[in-house]
Length: 167
Length: 157
Image (tube, rainbow over all chains, first blue to last red; front, side, top):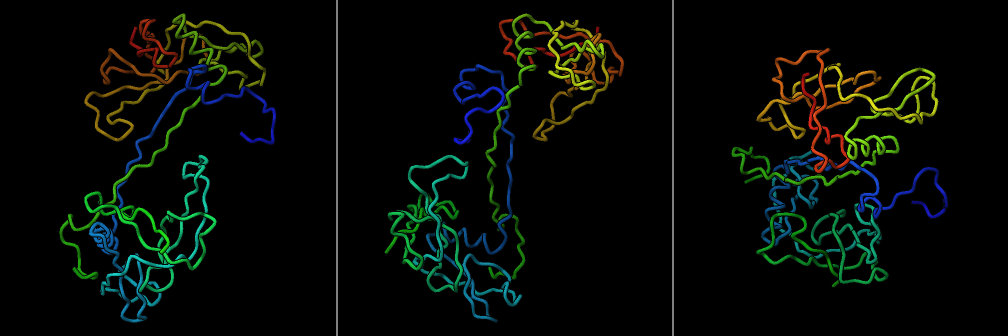
C-alpha cells in the first residue's frame, strides 16, 4: 500500500486479517509446470557446468568466441561447431544492486546481478550474481572468479556456479 | 557430438523442467461474505432484492445491474431450482483425465435472477437435461467452511 495515501476508499485488509480468517477468501495456486527444450548448444553448456567447466563456441568465420554457446553465429549466420573450454574468471561488464527480490518483496541485503565477460570470450557475457563483496565496492571492469557448488551438488544448471567473487 | 549433427536420441536433448510459482487469494467481497456466512451458519441460500426491478439476485449483488440501485434487502431463496445449462467434464483443471465424469451446471434458484455454477450429483451425465428440477445438498453444519462448496452438489428432485 502506498505510503503517500492515508485513506483508501473501501475496507483495508492486512495479511494478518487474511491469515486469521477475518474475511472469507478463495485460494488458488495454478499448476504451471513447463519443460523447456534447451537445444543442442545449451544442453552441452549445462552438462559442462555440471562438470565444473564453462564451455563456449568459436565461430570459424568471424573468430568470435561466445558464451553461452549457440549453434549459429548471430553476426555472420555461420553454423558453429568448434567448442572451447574457458576459464571461470572474467570481468564485470555491468551490474545492478538490487534491494527488491523477484517476487517484489524487499531485501535488507541486496543481490548484485551482473553481466560477466568470461576470459577468452569476446565482449558480452552472461548474467550471474556477485557476492563476497561490499555493494559499494563493485565496479565495472572488476575482475571476478566463479565460486562453484561442490561436484556432488551440481545438477547441470547455471546455479551450479553459486556466484562470482572479486579476485 | 558436433553442433550441426542431428540429435537422434531423445535423451541427448536436455529439457529444463520447472514451475511458475503463482498463487492468489481472492476476497469474496461484501455481498459474497454475507452470502457465504449465511450459508455456513444457517444453511440457507440468500440473495439481494431490487425493489425497483422486482428481481432477486443469486448470487447476491451489491448493485442492481439494471437500474444501479444499491441493494440492501436480503432475502432467503429456496434450495431448489432448475438447470439452465450444463457441461460434462472429462478432465481436471490440470488436464488430467478424470476417473469419474463430472457434471457442472448453472442452476437458477426458484424465484431468483442469475444462477450458481455448481456440481450436479446423484445422477449420470446422460440423464442431465436443461430445465431439470434440482435441489441443493448441503454439507453437515460442522463441515461447512464458508465456501460455495458448503453446498456438496445439486441433485435431481
